[in-house]
Structures are given as C-alpha cells and as structure tokens.
Image 1 (cartoon, rainbow, N blue to C red):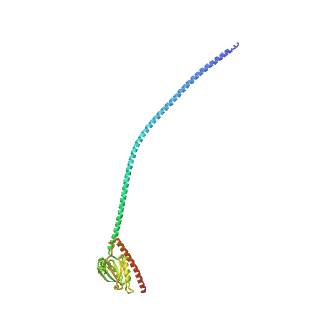
Image 2 (cartoon, rainbow, N blue to C red):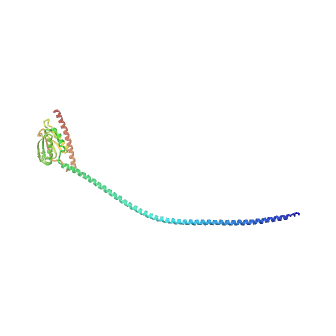
Image 3 (cartoon, one colour):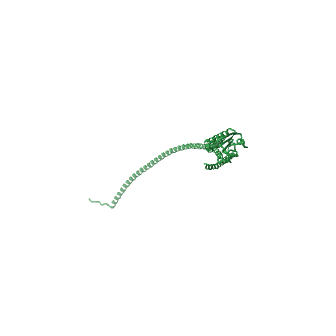
Length: 321
C-alpha cells in the first residue's frame, strides 16, 4: 500500500482545525475557569460582606452595649451627681451652721474675754483694796503697839543687870522724889529697890504733886537724875553714878536725863526726880519726829558725858589704888 501524500492545504486545514479545537477547548476551559473563579469571587465577596456585616453587627452590638453601659454609667453618674449635689447642699447647710456657730462662738468668746477682763479688773481692785486694808491694818497694828507701849508702865528690863552696873558706886545716898500718881510711884519703887541692891542708901522717898519743884510743876515728864557737880571731895563720883544710871535707863527704853543742881546737895548723894511717863501717841508726825531726834541727841550727849567722867574716875582709881 502506498502512502497518500497530503497536500499543504490539507495540512493547513488540519492544523487550523486542531488549533481551533484547541482554541475552543481553551475557551471552554477558560470559561469554566472563569465561571469557577467567578463563583469563587462571588462566594468570597459574599463571605467578605458577611464578615463585614458580622463585624459591623458586632461593632454595632458592642456600641450598643457600650452605649448601654455608658447610659448606665451616665445614669449612675447622674445619680452620684444628684447624691453629691444633695450632699453638697447638706454640707453647705452644715457649713452655714458651722459659720453661724463660729460667729456665735466669736461673740461668745468676745463676751468671755470681756467677762475675763472685767473679772481681772475686779480682782485687781480687790487686790488693791486688800493691799490698802493690809496697809491700814499694819498701820493700825503699829499704832496699837505704840499705844500699848505708851500706856504701859515703865519697867526695868533687867533690874539685876542695872544693879550690877551701879554697884561700883556703893555708898551713894539716894533721895527719891516722885509725882504722887500710880505709875510714877511704881517706877520709883523699882529704882529705889535697884539702888538698894547695888549697895546704895535710900535716905528719903517723897511723893509730891510738883516733884521737880519749879515752874514745870505737874506737867513735868520723864526722869531727872541730879547730883552735885562742884563737890570738893575728890572721891565723890556721884556725877558719874548719875550719868551711868541715866544712860542705863535710856538703854532700857525709859526716858531719863541728868541735871546739875545747886551745891547744897551733899556729896555722894543722888536725887531721882520722877514725873509722868512721856507719851508721843497724841503728837503730830512732825512733833513726833522732833521728839525722836531730841531723844537721840540726849543719848549722844549722855554717852559723851559718861566717857569723860569715866576717864576721870579711872584716873582717880589708878592714883588711889
């Protein structure tokens, strides 16, 4: 069998047929692929839209939940705001009450301060009055003591000591003249007893309405010790004895002075003249001060006389052992 040779036309026809068939197959496959892809795209698109919708729904739901919660929170916040407003109103009321109370307290404090100031002023007045009363009481007590001292009878604080100081003048003759009143008589007897204890001789004791025997008369006050100042007896120290007695009486608070007399007073003789007790209670302050000054001057003078006469006496003793 011999082979039939194909012409170029046949070959081209067959090629074209094959290509066309291939083209159709490709088109069919492409269409199917396109259809399949279209289905896939559609499904994917639907899935995408469903997903978007689901997400949107979820978001919407979440938003609604958030909105609900926000609403609830807003409600609660509103409730809290109302509660706070109520509390705030209550606090404002309390603040107003406290402010009122503070104002009242300030007024009360001011009143208390004024009351305290008034009480302090009253206390100061009471203390001032008390101090004045105490001062008046002290002055009254001093005045009472002075009155008691002035009206008290004259007494020797230590009769024994006085007698011991006068004993060295043993043998002195004592003349006593006193006002005939109880107090002068009392101190006169004490002095006479003291002299006798010291070894003096009581020669006379006279009571008289005018013991000083001169113009001073019944107004004479105090004690005067008299002696003979011009005795020619070198052993007559009656002047020293008189001064010693006067100094001792003054040191014991009894007003006394020495006074020279005429030469008719015998040697070794002392006369004690006793008047009323001097008193300062009725004197004004100026006169009382003057009287106190005179007392001091009198005591200074008596001490000076005592020193001089004591020196004379000691010289005589050395010359006449």
